Image: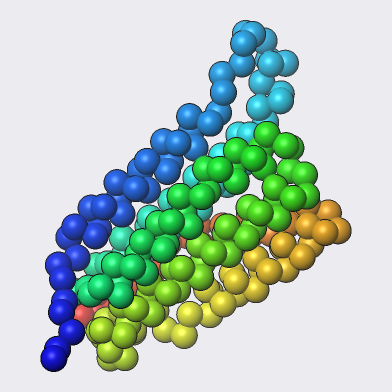
Length: 198
């Protein structure tokens, strides 16, 4: 019996909604100071840095998810669950973001933040591989993704960053920013392949 395929529209709409809520929750965690002085903003600096980093990551995942879904035309139950697993790990970001910022980048919160980033990367790979499985090795998605070197480097850097936190959490934090920087410039492979296929 052939595997049932579903329309991707509802999954994309649901994903966009969840990601928008995640960003909203993160910004609401930034508490307004009770006084109107510049000094009152100083304790907010780690919170704001944490917010910037997490906003970058959520934006990167939304951007890549958006591009990836443009290369596919069908999904199935496995893809739905893979997508939910990605959204689940992304939904933990507001918690670890607030925890890390409120505690001024101490060891355990920074380690937990890295574990969440690592889980984001792994669940995104799970989603991509689930889509590849139903579209094939010769699909537009497969051609656009290539050998996934950037993703493998990111996972390795997350592991190094988490381990580095046992020496100094600042090293881990810097490496989290490095990975965000690697992905900040949108990956042109998908757009290039879509243009070629048009």
